[in-house]
Amino acid sequence: MSNHFDYLVIGGGSGGIASARRAAAHGARTAIIENASIGGTCVNVGCVPKKVMWNTASIAEVLHLAKDYGFDADFKGFDWGALKQKRDTYVERLNDIYHRDLDASEVTEITGTAHFKDARTVVVNDQSYSAEHILIATGSTPVVPDLPGAEHGITNAGFFELEKQPKHTVIVGSGYIAVEFAGLLQSLGTRVTMLLRGEFFLRNFDASIREVLIEEMIKAGVHIQTSSNIRSIDKDSNGQLTIHYNEEESLGHIDTLIWAIGRGPLTAPLALANTGVRLDSNGYIETDRWQNTSVNNIYAVGDVTGRTALTPVAIAAGRKLAERLFAGQKDARLDYDNIASVVFSHPPIGTVGLTEEAAREKFGESAVRIYESRFINMLFAITGQKSPTLVKLVTVGDQEKIVGCHIIGMAADEIIQGFAVAVKMGALKRDLDNTVAIHPTAAEELVTLR
Image 1 (cartoon, rainbow, N blue to C red):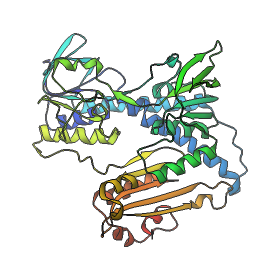
Image 2: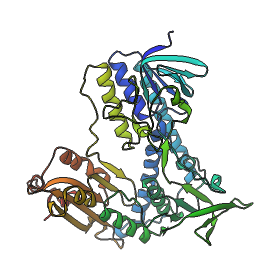
Image 3: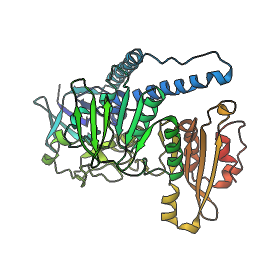
């Protein structure tokens, strides 16, 4: 078989697979190269197994409410090992589905680590492969700090390898991975401490949403330590960790340390110096709005570009690229504006568009009008626990165009999808006002704001 292809995709994650299959559907002879489990970070050590864990924690939270609803029920914990086995089996089933789908699409799978020989040729396991078009979709990798004892910590991948539930976990980081892990572990009974370098987490999210989450996580028992700079980590003969931070502070008797301080582009194995592909100051591959790199037959999508690191974004960008290259759709490209996202925290967050701060900076103080409501979801009406929901619209101009929609609370992850469509279509506040509410729901608050 010839080793020359129309389309060669490096990286078998969500973006790479989507682009490869779409190209093949348009008749392109396509191959995909992957050196680990098919499906990439999302399927194997990211959003999919994370959502299983979030569901588990959410069930635990509901069980705690059962007595208030008249059930004679006690929460006695759960079997971490049994859950892990079922979760791993589910992920393996998804891996098999990806392999079958690639085979059905007649995409050639190549297993190994690719590096560029030149701009049209890559080498895998000492075998050369060439293509008219090459896509880089290798994703990103977690950052681990260069500190004494840093190797005693784990990243997201290590978390999903844990055979036993941690008793006391320290999570270092302030992004969505940090708050997601903190929330689910605390809900399942693990003692959780978060160490933040700054004063708050989720710094790119709307302040109103962030403040509610901090309040709820502290109320749930998560200890949040701000202005914390780690110096070193020690590990004793029993496997217990001591974390030294700031000048003289320390945390001991820690069984699990999770690094969640960010991710970096996975480009090192590629030997991009042999191609002329330019990287930015942070090591991400530079791309234009068409996913073109600085080399005219090489493209990049997904986390490796440093642009909106979300699985659906990589999938959409990869498919659009394949449409442009192989279906004659010369204007096909992903619009990166108003992309919705969700944080599977406890409670969850749904957001799309500009934060209040960003809107005021872009349009000016006088042009921005905020609509906001905070309330208790009806689920908690008859319970001792009261968890708030907050909804917020950011509007601009005399017509009050909606440029931001932010939600925290039960079902925020599901509610935001529909309102993301409205924001993407350029909805005005009066469009929501003219929509009849569905009662009683949390979502109705967004169409009844005054």
